[in-house]
Length: 334
Image (cartoon, rainbow, N blue to C red):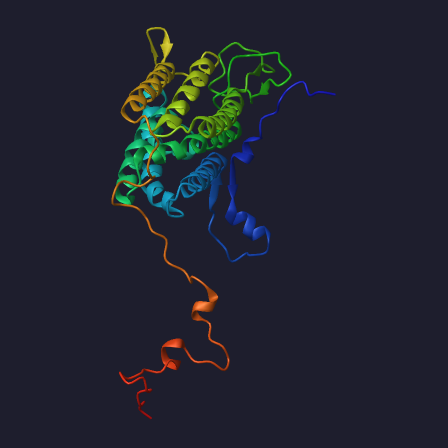
């Protein structure tokens, strides 16, 4: 029998008190209460997934293993900063009103990271990190394309635990149950109203997009930023469409939500990258590294026989006798 609705996680699942968990295990001496929010946990898992994917894609093209970490040290913080600023700017009513606690602008763990702002901030950080690491920026961006979609899909589970970013009412079997009193629920709706799980739709769209980008890269050798351009187009189309279902408050400009305008900009930018890069770089990238910045792996042992000595033998350099011009062995010091 199919379920008639999709339940939301209870409120107590939104955060996990590590300190209390340790005390329950018998470590009464641990007095700190360290809470981990589900939203932050899924964001972190998404970042880890993206790093693993990018590392695989870069090293398969000859990059130094884990050079992605050097780049992520700049891209991730600036991405989080850009995502938060974009969210606050496009949702000013949530943070700026009489009596508002302005410190909540910094409460990222409560939710509210706009992907388009994260892309802008992360791009700046990635450019800095790639420049310092000697990696071509577009090579890194192409390696990141499927990884960022997987990261976004993973992060959307945090929205599920926070009961946020759901869509319009629906009677579909996978309609989402939302706790009554949620500020995003329009006034006047019955308490048992079900809603579209738009975050789940976006997550599925992102996973499919990652598979499409991987397949297209293998089939068409997408380089010079073209794989990343495909990401911008794919995500932009999905986000623009899903915004019509979203209920969360957002700035509306000329009849479209702010994120829809950002999605259209992403699509246009993706198309522009493909056109410009196809004309500027018709061939393949010679390397993921900029000229003169190539990484050379450390030389290992070429062969065992080169360094291994027999039990009853001496190294060739020592065992060979030094001969004189007459052909007789030269005397050796004893």
